Amino acid sequence: MYGFEMMTFNIHGGFLEAIVRGHRSSLLTASDYNNLCQCETLDDVKMHLSATEYGPYLQNEPSPLHTATIVEKCTLKLVDEYKQMLCQATEPLSTFLEYITYGHMIDNVVLIVTGTLHERDVHELLEKCHPLGMFDSIATLAVAQNMRELYRLVLVDTPLAPYFSECITSEDLDDMNIEIMRNTLYKAYLEDFYQFCQKMGGATAEIMSDLLSFEADRRAVNITINSIGTELTRDDRRNLYSSFGLLYPYGHEELSLCEDAEQVRGALEKYPAYQSIFAKMSYGESQLLDKAFYEEEVKRLCLSFEQQFHYGVFFAYMRLREQEIRNLMWISECVAQNQKSRIHDSVVFIF
Figure: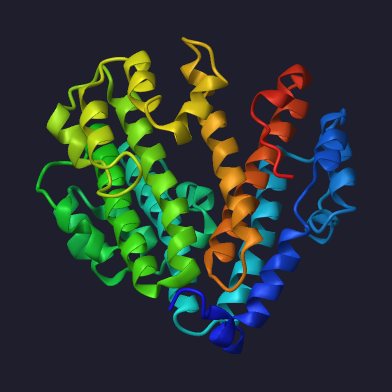
């Protein structure tokens, strides 16, 4: 079917593709970020954002502003745009859009379960949950004592139910088990999303294959680095890697054997796509890896807009907007704490 999308794509997807490309043109530019970096207070940040599409969401917020308020209102704009697109989408685009939110659902489940374990108030935790990952029974997660109860009492009726088959155990929930649960769920989710995109075929399969493979490889690297020095065995580590991506399977074998960050670097430098990421960093600068991965992801997401008649632009737009909100949160925190010299440490320019 590849190459023939232009004959039928616009029947159902043309209007929404035009909408999402219009939204993409409203993303903040380098000059917007340069202006934001000059701000002295959060009210200055609000003033600069009032000239963008965030303006209507922030205009009624009284002083003094807080970073959490700015992030909340910017996220609300993203949620409104997502709901607008979902309401007008038909199959298979509506299912594709729902898949985009499953990652937030997993993060919300982990947030509630971890917070309950540390005896935090459930209502306080619910306020911190991402609005795109909410579902009806999320508040009752607090009653679960182990994975089996978590599944049987709550998650069996949610879209995450199929992903729980690999991590249902009777072990009590603790920090280590919860982190393993998060990565097992993400692995199952990414593999399912990848298979869904492959079935769609055409340009959507080609572009989403690249974007999801990059996500799977990034998670494999993060799992490896975060599990160094823990009780996680090599087999446990290998079981958390997704079964696709540029690093699959030989890169995964090498990563599972790594004992420090420099060995991870050595394993990845054999792959030209990731060699360029490590070329920007000198040895011992593994703390800059997150930003380097975000920059590479943004580059790939922007490239997906160069091709037409595919659903990858919806995934790309949502990710770019989330990156923009992370940028705004970092800038706002630096301004609020009078640490303007550190603003450029974590800001990833999109255009």
